[in-house]
Image (cartoon, rainbow, N blue to C red; front, side, top):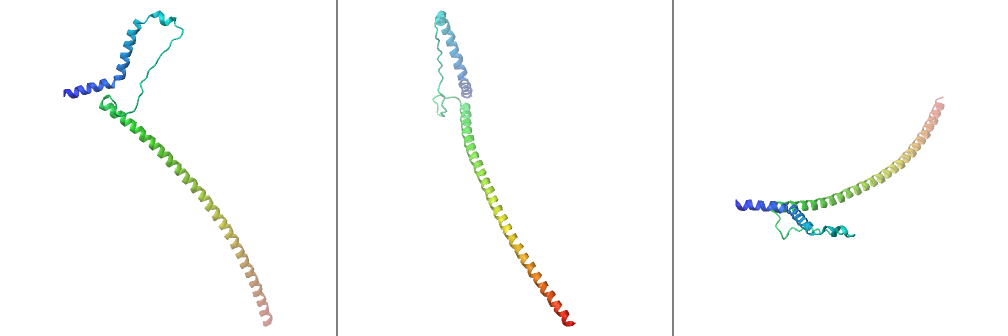
Length: 157
């Protein structure tokens, strides 16, 4: 039980290490402020501020123990972002593929429709010609029948 309590306490301290480090630095700067001469800074025409920031790497195998919960959270967040990026790329590729397929299908449908329209127009004209030919033959037959009927009627007289 004591080990668990100490582990939890250590983990809380490690999780707040950035806040504690900043507070310690501010205390040191406050101590240095009393040591530095006040007129020295005010009389200088050029004042420089140096800012040092640690390089944060996303390395899982850090040299310091940072607490199991925080480490798990960091790993899960990083892996989640990586999966999300891969999913976004695959989704974009799939969307582009679907759009290409739709465009090809539309073009194919237009070509097929044009071919069908052309075939129907060609068949329609052929049917019209055939109907006209049949009508002409019927007219000729009717004319012959009329001639035959006239001849029969003359023979009967």
